[in-house]
Image (cartoon, rainbow, N blue to C red; front, side, top):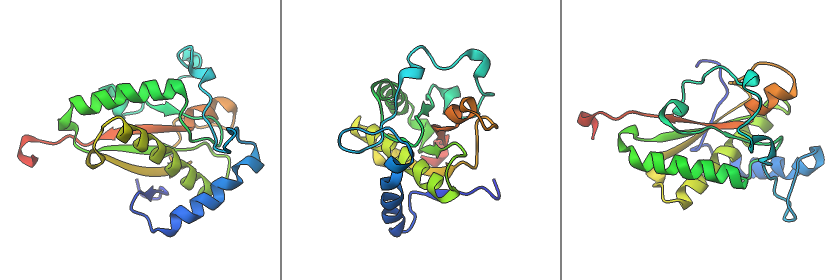
Length: 182
């Protein structure tokens, strides 16, 4: 979509340094962290299946239609909690079972709080964390790609906690391969 801000995984090497510097400031802006200082996603609000159905955003034409679950994060966090890891295990099995999907792109998204640059870096960190865990589960790196849209593509438009929690996510997109392309 023209005008969207994105950051691809093949960005210049200096982006990693900028991400580290910006994300290291996370503790100063109210993020939850472990003893090691890494932000952690708290699964508590998702343990009962997510927010109320009346708060569910409109369907996203993404991997969810194929059985790939969207992963949600707490404010200013990118680490994966126990329930998130369970969802990603199911996603890894689905990706392995469907080679016709080709490359699966993991999109990192954020809510509107924070600067555009910070949110692009945070979205990339979320996507990278998910792809790293999928790799640990045996999904080949050649089947995965990442992109960050930061706050540019909200699932829910709004400026309240309901909108914020639905927008802090990673979404899965697939590329169908035809027999001729293989």
